[in-house]
Length: 160
Image (cartoon, rainbow, N blue to C red; front, side, top):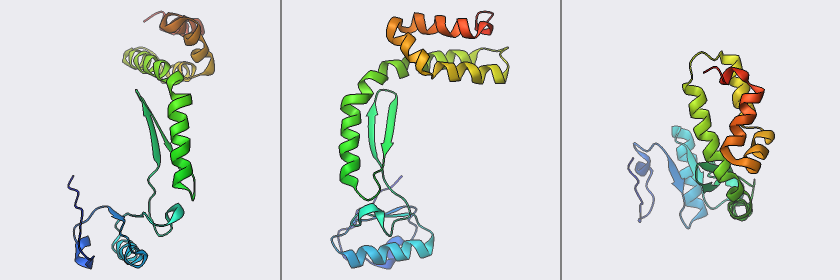
């Protein structure tokens, strides 16, 4: 993917061949012109200078990432609130979820690789794996207790 940053006055031909546009100049009237042209050409556009993305056809969420987790946050008309919430989630919520999510990803992969489990049973197993009970079992005893919970609730796993 090519990214071009234009550092001169905007020209409509700048949009030729563009697949995605960020209107982020220091001029509200230029940003509006870019948005109007993008919308008329069917080019997705995000306008950086309007709260809530007025004039945009897509939004860019604040994203909290930790390990295998990514949480996207949008706060309507306040990117600053979204950023604060993202920071709080990164610091207060995600650390407790990362290890569990990583173990669940491995167990899920093992379950999906097992043959002989009917699709409906597999869905039920995966729902249990993502449940609060599974998270509590993991917190009490790690992967062994999580697997024990799964085997107790889904005996078909023991036959694989």
